[in-house]
Every structure is written in structure tokens, then in C-alpha cells.
Image (cartoon, rainbow, N blue to C red; front, side, top):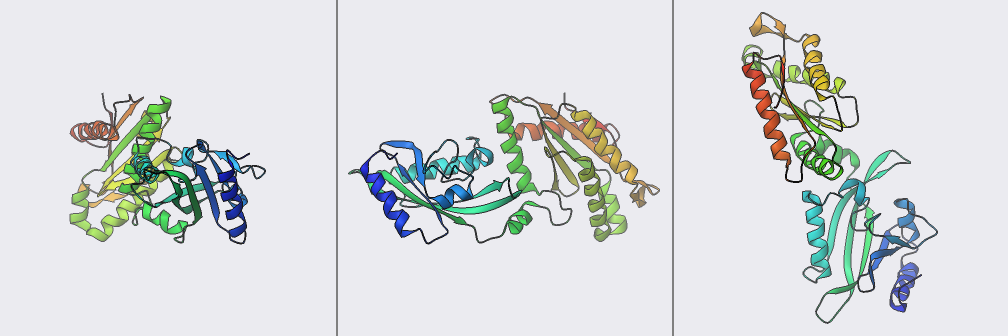
Length: 313
């Protein structure tokens, strides 16, 4: 069960010392088998691991990053790069302690929980490199509600720009890996400055809320991510949608039929200009490329008289 007596003794010692606590803990023997970790029963219960086993695969559940494959498995993402950099620094003796905060989705409870992971070398070789790592995982004190608030725009309730950037990069890398389609819809409220100048910023905020509701109503799929991009601009990231033109047109139409009156345009309805881009990305493509393409389409929608949808060609 254990690769050597050393790891077995360490495991039994910590099992006796920490059996009174509610902490998850783990051990990795980097010298004999860096792809296996040994953990306590609490960790098995917390992260849905087989409780009859004490050894588990790092590839399936990374102990320093929780549900790694579901949350941050794409190595091109900024979060993954940070994890890999600090993990290898810990292994090579550059740093003495690793710390990470990660999300974990509990399917049984249908909730995302947040945890703090810490790791330190228990044994080092003569050059100072780690041979055996020990780590603990404990629930993050900050509630998931606060994490959720950090992801959303306080006015409209849609995801904010920070979450947009994170989701687009993440889903772009997934699309590259799986060769699935990713699309971006960019929306801009037509003549919004005139609206603000005529009615004031409070009324302008109410208008933004109404437009956000229209977009959210249309984006009902879990893979359609509606965001406030900034000011009067909104963005929708769509993963795997094969009919993005229909979604873009549905958003434009929903805003139009909501009939928010525009006082500077004879009280006609507030409208959206919409530009969109859809692709199965190559390995060289970045999220910035996708934004620039959708933005060019949006600009052409403005040139074409507004209240229209234009696809980037």
C-alpha cells in the first residue's frame, strides 16, 4: 500500500496526531511516486474520494488545487501557471511553503465551496529539494456569497469585467483543447449618452438594469455567460453553441420589444447594436483575438445604422 516504510510511518504518525481535527491532510512521496498522494478519511469525504482507499491519483484530484480538472485544468490559464510555478518552487526548495485558495463544486449539495490549501516539505535531500510533501486543506473563512459578489456587477447583477476576462480565457483554452466552438457577442446601447444627458445618470442606471434583464432572460443556457463589459457595453460568451446568430438576434430583439422609451429619439425604444464572432480556435488563438474580432463586428453594426446584428467575417 505504501511505497516505503518512511511514508508509512509518517502517515501513521499524522493519522494519530490529527484524528481529532476536521482538517483534510495529504502526503506525497516525490522521490518514489510523485503521482500518488495519501490522505485521511476527512479529505475523502470532503472531495468525494473513495473512502476505502488512502492512496489516490494526483491526475484525478490535485491535492494542492482541489477539483483541479474541473476548475483550473487548462495549463494556459493564469491561475494554472501560478499553481505550477509555486508548486515546482516548493519541490525545488525555492520556497518553504505553498498556499492556494481554490473552488470546489460539491455535486451532492449543488454548491461551490472554497478551501485554503497549504503545503510544506517534510523531508529534503542534500541539495535542499523536497522529497516528501505534507499538506492540509481547510474551509476558507470567507463565505461563498462574498466570492459570488466579487464576480458580479453590483448594478446589473450580471458577471463583471474581471469575471468576463477569466471566463473567456478559460473557455477559449477549453475550446482549443476539445476543438469546440466558442463565440462572443458584444452589445452596445445605441445613443446611450443622449439618454443620460436627457434624463440623468439615475435614469441611465435604471435603463442599464432593464437591458441587463433582457440579456439575462435570453441567455438561459448554462454555457451562455452574460457580462457587463463596461459602461453601456455588454458581452455574452457562448461555448459550444452552433447557432450563435440566433442568440445574437434574440438578444437584440428582446431589448427592442422591452420598449424602454428613449426621450431623445421621440420616445422610441432603446435599442442595441450587436456584433458577434464565432470560431473553433486554433492553438495560436487568444481571448484577445476573439474580443477584437467581435468588437470590429460591433463597430460595423454601428456604421450600418444601429439596432442590427453583424457577424465578423
